[in-house]
Image (cartoon, rainbow, N blue to C red; front, side, top):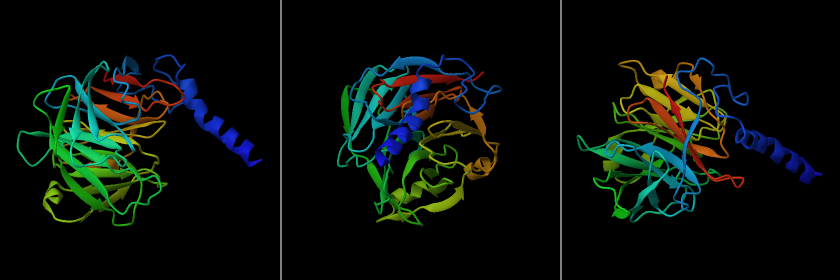
Length: 302
């Protein structure tokens, strides 16, 4: 009996993703929240991933140094690699992080750091499906000046603990204005936003995150802040939430308003989203699931 209940549940959960692969790339997609008056267009397929090593993409971020270049990575148990691709999904190389492991990398971000006029890559070792790890980590290193087939870096590592116990998270965001680092939980019924600062990288031992606020949705799996800090994206498996940030506002102040629902074509297991450097479009990418190859989608601002 339990087997049949589980089978029915699995079909129910999988159906939206399977159907979505056959939904035309139109503005109106009835399986997700309404967005007819959206600021952004519906999805456009821009490419499939050329590098077959990328099969569990769980983060996406645009370079601030190299035009048309994105970074991604695999999640739990993958190699400690940051993969480089262009906006058509073509392979452009990889960065090998020395001295660290990929226990469960779940998101990647690009933003400012300790040195002025230098762009940094942040990799979030923040996944914890069973809430069993006492600490999480963020790895930081400058963006490479040149793109190579393979290059190595030794990142700085920040070790963090939650003030209210271990939890799973898949969203890492860097505020380009204040340089604050934000992590958003995943499995709480109302997801929780946490914050730390760049100064935390210089502290010895473990640093406790600051609990900032709760948001009225769950299962957050990715997020990004535009390069000028004026727009915020957070997604779960079925929707993309969007906020415009007013001049002088903090990230929590902007997130305290109700979000706008943006276009999103549900993916097999979509856990990656990124603004382009101009904030005029956003891209999404999925892990490989149900024998469906990952597709890079673009949503353009009208």
